[in-house]
Length: 114
Ligand code: HEC
Image (tube, rainbow, N blue to C red; front, top):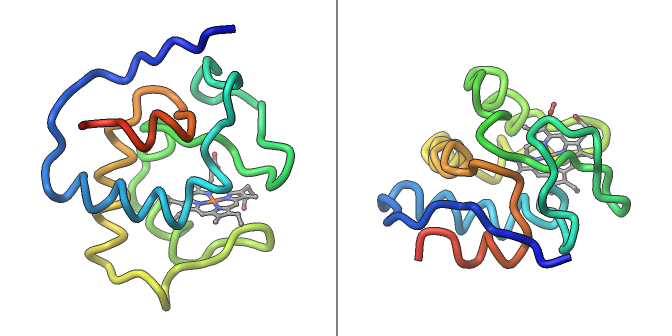
């Protein structure tokens, strides 16, 4: 079951780093896989049981307008962030999401880009 992490090692820009820490504190609890559920193909229907949040990757950032809207408004199952994140912070989260080649594990989120 060893989960192969294929996140490329690269240095994150300051914007991506800020986005990563926001993602870790605001999004990861619902949107990051738990090992060993890590090798799921982007777009997989597999979801975390506790929250039903789909595992996120750059695939979810292909339509930025829609993504920004989703983060701001949320849904019945997901909190909206229009009162808690600034437009700049939302842009940072989106920049970070674009670096996620495959859905991340909690561990990989913590390590990515270091
Ligand atoms: C309390 C859990 C929770 C948190 C926190 C949360 N989400 Fe969600 N999110 C969900 C659930 C559940 C869904 C699926 C239902 C839906 O689409 O509303 C979802 C859906 C999404 C989708 C749509 C994915 C798709 O394929 O349609 C995106 C994008 C998304 N979330 C991004 C984020 C981002 C970015 C954050 C952090 C700023 C975040 N979410 C925080 C629970 C959460």
